[in-house]
Image (tube, rainbow, N blue to C red; front, top):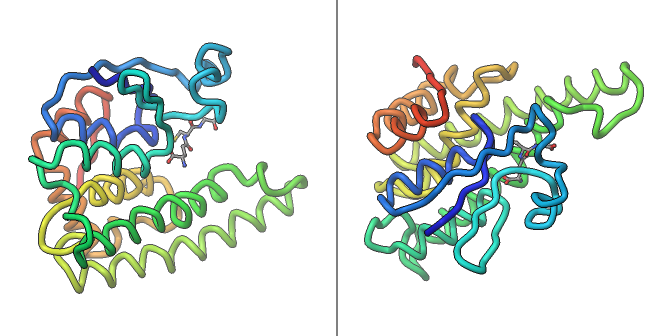
Length: 210
Ligand SMILES: N[C@@H](CCC(=O)N[C@@H](CS)C(=O)NCC(=O)O)C(=O)O
């Protein structure tokens, strides 16, 4: 049985949705970030980054949302949420998942937590402004991809689309929002309609009107 360490609306959303898509047995262990639970020694012992999500699969501990999606979607091939190895779609799928986590997520992080990158209030504002500009261009790249293929990696939904949905959801409060771009809005709407995603949203106490 899987165990997912999570916080409401955190980077666990995509994993939580995937676990629902897979219809497998799992338990949720809440790490309330607002209470600083991510810094508790027993949590740091499994994820020394002090961040969510973390997945336990027996003796296997895995963190980083994109890595967990790759792992789980491959482990449950019957749901076809990962393109087959060595296919063109597989290359595109890996590319966007890695890009979203190392580029878009980090740009969003710079905007939300400029204090990580700069000391003074003026420098922090500069980081925020730069991040907002970068974010707009990055959403435009995704919008262009969705003009080429109906889902991120082709004509079938994959785990990468759950990751995109998660960041699109977060962008409700960003200066550059996914939902202000027609294809990204349509993408989020389609993902949100999935029963598994609805269950994840309900279990995390989240809502999104598009
Ligand atoms: N690259 C990581 C980022 C995880 C992340 O940023 N998690 C945030 C919540 S969305 C967190 O745990 N923050 C707590 C902290 O930094 O203290 C992933 O995708 O798993």
